Amino acid sequence: DAGITQSPRHKVTETGTPVTLRCHQTENHRYMYWYRQDPGHGLRLIHYSYGVKDTDKGEVSDGYSVSRSKTEDFLLTLESATSSQTSVYFCAISFKESSYNSPLHFGNGTRLTVT
Amino acid sequence: GENVEQHPSTLSVQEGDSAVIKCTYSDSASNYFPWYKQELGKRPQLIIDIRSNVGEKKDQRIAVTLNKTAKHFSLHITETQPEDSAVYFCAAPTRAGKSTFGDGTTLTVKP
Image (cartoon, rainbow over all chains, first blue to last red; front, top):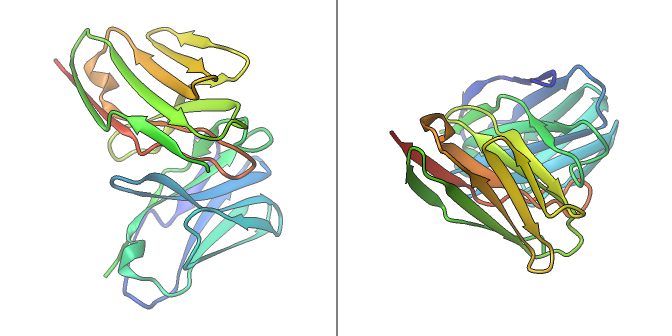
């Protein structure tokens, strides 16, 4: 499983509340990613990180923020959850360089429901 | 743009038949093309990949072909088995952090 742990695995929250999802890796890989997966949309990149405190936006970053204060942890925060953010969230890492030329290894996902 | 189109969206085959899934990309800078398999309720996992200096790659019953001129690459599964039933995603990363995925193909192998 490439040493990736996502927590929580499931969460139900109410509209307007903040939510933080955690991705933890044990192998000191530089690149980490957050994706969301929705039916009919495949996997869409939210944010990614290329080092401690180095992050950038993906294609669906509105309403999300991230932080990476340690190599091993990449946090995704929904500042004020909305029903449109109900989704399955996957964290991923790439072992070599970046996803530009190496495969992604995914965590087991977090199923988030916003009511 | 960083667009990847994947077809078909659903594919049903009889056990033992072949299955082919095709992806088309738009950015000529792409030079790495992975395929992922996602079983129901599980995470996507890499099954095969190809780089732009290679036209074809095989791994047992699966193969990937790449046509850089036409900007498309395909996944071929031969002698399909029920355990091949899953969602398959292609990707065509264009630069660091911008890994664009196709929308997925749901493959059903009927026994």
